[in-house]
Amino acid sequence: MAKNIDWLRLCVEIMATGVQYLWGYLDIMKKFESLSPHAAEVLEYACSDNGVKLSHYDELVSLCNSLGHGFRYSGMYITSLECYKKALSLQDNVLSPMHSHRAILYYNIAWLYDKLLEYDTALEWYSKDLIISEAVHGRNGIQTAHTYNSIGTVYEKKQEYGKAMDYYKRALYIFRTKLGENDSSVSAVCNNIANIYAKKQLYEQALIWHHKDINICEKSLGENHPDTATSYSNIGMTYYEMGDFQNALDWYKKAIFIRHEMLGKNHPDLEVTIRSAFMAYSEFDNLLIPFDVWLSNTIQGVD
Image 1: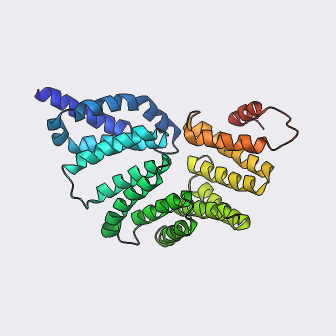
Image 2: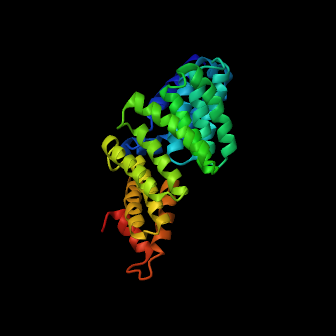
Image 3: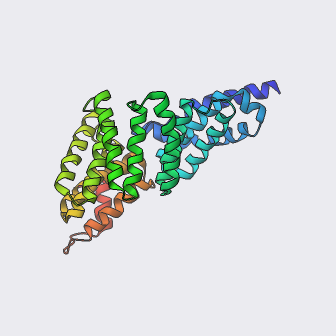
């Protein structure tokens, strides 16, 4: 039995380190895709034994978080949620209610409910996170600022733009103060502020903030990063709302190429951008080529 336990612990440790997922690094993302089914089986087997759960707590939580993180950014939101909640159930037996690791899990779970369009549930989990983050890191802590920014995105989707902007401004102040003007966290808030102005039809203001976001993204992350693609897609949406369909299509084209290369053909972020591009493309009266041909050319990098 001891040998079996040692073997299981070794499997968990190997999988916890082997399925790391780094957003924007294609080779590591592909490695996760190939290893994650095996890691999930190891996790399921290990968690079925209460003795193993207690004796291998650190390794199992690490594996839960690694899988949750990878599935989350792969667009497998339900599967990711299951992994994070499994980590939370493991923590219930070990960590105090105000431990900072709980706040991180609450944040990740809230983020997923946001993606699943369950906004009120997302706010409930962000509130749990915020109570701990403010207590542990302070109201001007970087982790707290990430929570402020994410709460703002939920209120934005609920069309409560005043509340959203308040949270964005809190986050922006902290990120600029603690991280400087050119950090990717600053660009993320700039993007969100741009989206608010666009939804309020204040397009010139929106474009100013979009370009602030894009300039920082390209410098800090590079032009081929998935987050940069998000910025390209969002400015495309603003141009579409302005009725400038050619500019919209040009930005969508850049986003589609990156998302296809970096995230794969089945990722939900790519699907959203393709639908947006189709809407812009359909606004042209004289289409030189069908949209499917345009899309194929875009994915292949053909002008």
